[in-house]
View 1: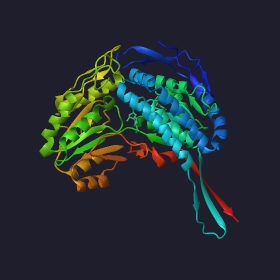
View 2: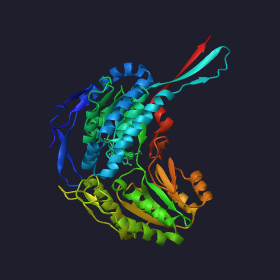
View 3: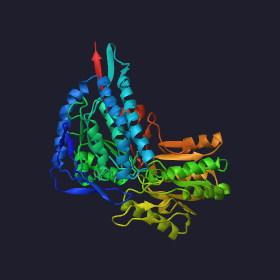
View 4: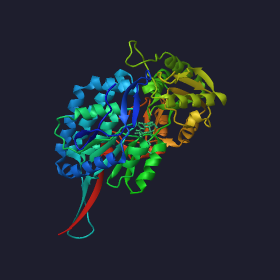
Amino acid sequence: MNAPLSNYIGGRLIASGSSDLIPVLNPSSGAVISEMPVSSREAVDEAVAAAKTAQVAWGRLPAIQRGNALRAISARIRERVEPIARIISQEQGKLFGLAKVEVAFAADYLDYMAEWARRIEGEIIESDRPGENIFLFRKPIGVVGAILPWNFPFFLIARKLGPALVTGNSIVIKPSEETPLNAAAFIELLDGLDIPEGVINVVYGTGAGVGEAISSHPDIGLISFTGSAATGSRIMAAAARNITKVNLELGGKAPAIVLKDADLEKAAKAVAASRTLNSGQVCNAAERVYVERSIADAFVARVSKEMKAMRVGDPLGATEIDMGPMINRAGVCKVEELVRSALDSGATLVTGGRGTAEEGKGTYYEPTVITGCRQDMDVMRKEIFGPVLPVMTVDSLDEAISLANDCEYGLTSSIYTENLSSALKASRELSFGETYINRENFEAMQGFHAGNRKSGIGGADGKHGLYEYTSTHVVYIQS
Ligand code: NAD
């Protein structure tokens, strides 16, 4: 087992000094692979102080120099795709192939954000007053507090770091308790790079400790959070004490609508792949299906065949697999409860339905399809975050759209149809941050990933995501 991890504050590795350690498990086997320190609020104070000092000079650098720093990090990432991917597979359970995609995408993302260095634009605004110029500047906010989940632990560091740094902010990152080794691998990459000390800081700890200390810190200007809606709500409440800006990327309950004119084979393959990607632990994966009655049996037969054929196992084991474990026992238990309650309320199990969550063992759940679902069932309303596909039959596009929108989450949605009018109607009437037509996730880095309702506030990616990390400053000049 590795030594306990050290925080990264002011450009140095600093032992947390805490004897309180959280075991880091390999979800494929339940084996303890490391220990994460539970840092104190004082560690957060030190990191924020270092970040605040560093930000002043960092924010005054020409943006191109900050972009070059991101490119230096991405170059290091590209040299270490496989070792970092191995860490992701080991502590998060992601398929090794997908983990490599995640790492390479993180590098691409930093390069993409580096390109924005030459495109951070203010505005010149016409004034009503004679002889007056109005300039709108985009400036850094200051110190960004980034609080991360475990499901894309390496990429999400890049998604927060890229826009924060290129726009001139410094950052304090809190990784998830489940995946701290990813953050440790990221810190290692920084060794010897010409990035001023204090611009990037990492503090390990619990949500209630380090997470809360970041959210309520008066010297942090933006809390950039990705995680569950319940935690997002707590973070907002803590941030409210200082009126700190929040950017919240929260949970989803993505509907997939399958119409009678859809390419059924394509729809079934896409939905099954999405529902089992990262063992169903993806915020924008299809979480519920509304299928038109006349093709419901044919769709269910196809999608079930796909799900049944999936080989489940250890991503770093000897045999080839299609899906790895779930993150932990709590995740498996939640899925078991949702399936049990749906079946008790009259739904039918078509395939799957079994999980393992014993202490000291791997945490797995079979790819599962259940039909005969109704809108009032928890499995159709709550985020499952596991490889379970609940299917409900509908009689029209109008009914499907109305049921899809009837949800506290509003992150992503999808529709399968070969009819342009149906696709356009869905684009107009679905109330979600994103809609995929004839495909499932992922989003593109040049888009804007944001959710309605309890799926969040603000968003990430592209120009709009970049500007979330800036403050505007309007200057009036009378000549
Ligand atoms: P989580 O909310 O349990 O934890 C996320 C982070 O918040 C962790 O680092 C945790 O320590 C911290 N935290 C917990 N309590 C806190 C508190 N009171 N104050 C401050 N920080 C606190 O989420 P998770 O289980 O790690 O991730 C899964 C969730 O993330 C799912 O709901 C998923 O949909 C969502 N997610 C959303 C997106 C998106 O882009 N919208 C992307 C990935 C994951």
